Image (tube, rainbow, N blue to C red; front, side, top):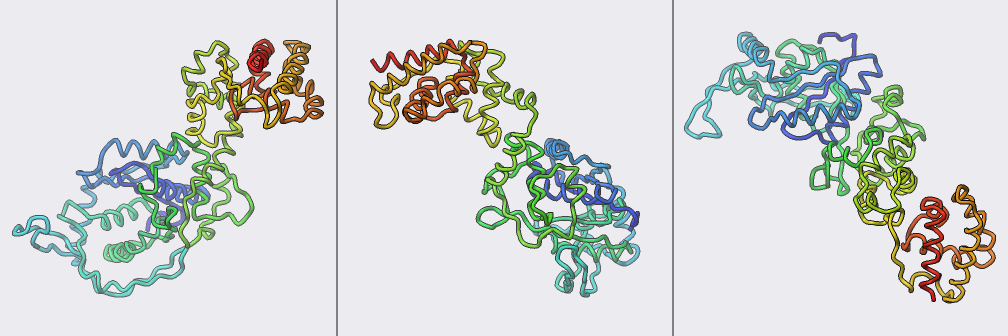
Length: 448
């Protein structure tokens, strides 16, 4: 094994599909381990399956890793290494460790093809897994397994072993579904006389039904998740899928993870994927997001119903950001709230239903009296000082005396036309004194 003194890890995605959660988590753990040891993180595109491999998938994978902040130190493509594989296959055959076998084609019965098989002595293979301890396989049942379709076409196991050796991979950190691949790869390593890398097989990511996470559980593509979640939240959450820092800390930057990641703290049991937990972590990052960045995201999402409202101003995105930053846990919820018309009252006139203005059993005459009193008090506040704090201070004692629900419910409904909305003081401040008074008067008139 080359460069044994320096840690070198790799992620080897196949461009036959988009970057999914499992591959991204594997990439993250390999990245963290390498960077935590001042090592090298390699991305190797396994594109030998020409029929299924597509350039757009490779682009999706590389852009996804970049979006997550997992920049590679070196990039390789198996498709560019054909001659290297061919040379190694020839070496194996000439050494007697492998042989060409003429066999009937499984795809086309009656036709014969020449494949390359590894001579297998059927011995026990034992390796130490950094997560699972010592693992032993008896390789007798594998027989002389096929390692190449032709002299120029290596199969997965052979290409992986050659690549890992040539690239000096010291640690192979991958999903536990690859454990069964390990004995074949060790036999190939030994046939070449290669050194053995250190293995660590991570727990699988599971869906709610405790089966391996797949498309039937919902979105698994990182590009889809990035449409609704911040990259910081995704990285933070992926790190906690199968790894526990051993502390109460919940939120980690990528730099934090590099410093704290310890391969010995990866658990053996499957890691349950929870959208609720991801939402919770993402909400934290949204609330911590700089105001200008959050406002820019909200501005791009604004629907025509808000943009064309008569009260729309340059301050509207900031006002809506304040509301959304507290409520929306992801970008999907932000879009949903905006497009539902739930916040249209900030820029457009409201429609009132008589039956909804009064609080519970409060009479119409009392509701009218309370709103008239609030209207009178608000009229006395200077327009330039018409803030949420000022409006609240002005009527809070009165609302407490008469009953907060009886006073504040009709006020909030009058200002928003909604049964559910932010508090009336922030709404009044957002729409301004003149519009607030107009809406309160409209509700008073409706009560007549």
